[in-house]
Image (cartoon, rainbow, N blue to C red; front, side, top):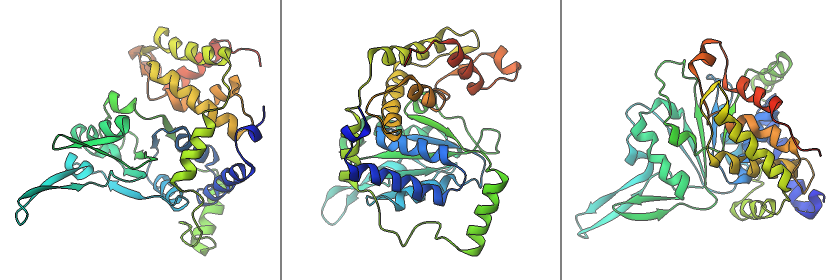
Length: 322
């Protein structure tokens, strides 16, 4: 089965155009762009980590410029309150009633910039909406628009003034995407583009490629990608191996197995197929699992990182024959 059976010709061309446009804006970060698009199409949220100045915010703003739906941005700071994110109820003295003032979370694409600079109480305000797709204000649930996606950026914990995100919140992110310095050649091209103003970095003069209906339709079609029992079993075995590894103190839960399959379906479509291969699962294992495991003290003393442990597991767990 090919992707032609899953997506129409127009849909396949749209995805290709979207990838090309985002790669024009964020030069040298093709893998990062692909993973963010995977989160959007899989119906999940993304956590993008990297030092300042690598284009994390630019990527999200470029995606928003390509999307015709609503977009909001919250700059997380140490004094940000939960109500600043979700909204609150105000008493209208003239009418004698309470009116709900909705916060910036009521949008399609929500950029939470430097999320780990706010205290845990404010970070936790996102939990309900990320999981349940609604916010409770004065005891009444308020649904957010669909599709809804949180794109959070954070600086590494080594940066001054950062806080570790709660594990329950981390688990709600479909992927943790790492963005690194570009190559010398890509940095030269980026510098020339910006300084010569060859390209409008926010694509302000280009029509949006996506809207709410298109995203929802793409998600529905991608759910039809075939997942063989052997591939599903492989994803589950990878996740379960994180719970039995000596170098991992806390392994990933069942939500990770579900996330792997969701991302593998998108990967298959982006690769022109209507069925999942083991390589689709391998390609997404690190971004799906790296924020869901906690290394043991011995592993940290040995200088190992989450990706190192995950690579060991990928080498250890046998994949089904394609």
